[in-house]
Length: 164
Image (cartoon, rainbow, N blue to C red):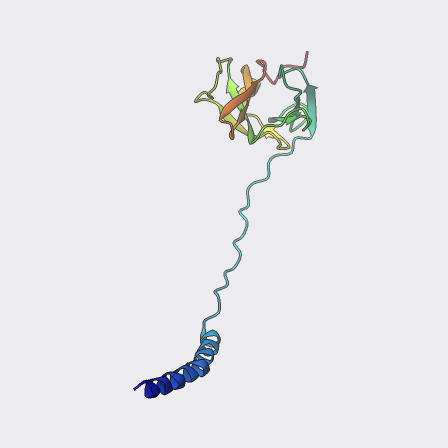
């Protein structure tokens, strides 16, 4: 009884030893190729307007932090305004720092007011200002998204006034 079963198992395993690698090779040859998709075209955003004219530079608008703010304009006498914020990396390291414009001089503690306007990331070249920034006083707020907290608030400023 045992000898016929052992002979059957021996023949079965020999057959499996031959057919399994053959089935694997045929399965690999018969599989469909991976679908190749065309790369999506990069979305074309309109280029921000250039701001070649420097109106003024100030280092005293943010009290406790060494931040330099440069006011830029599209043309020498007229056009949209933008600010450029910069600081040395050694003195000022904050994660995910965003710049907001808040009209008026509201008391800011930990939360941004609802009417705060996002200008962009702190490290951006030029942050276009809303048109209301040239006609009304307001403050620039530096807000850390990672810490979910206001980092610094500038002194109240109106951007169409010359630097003192």
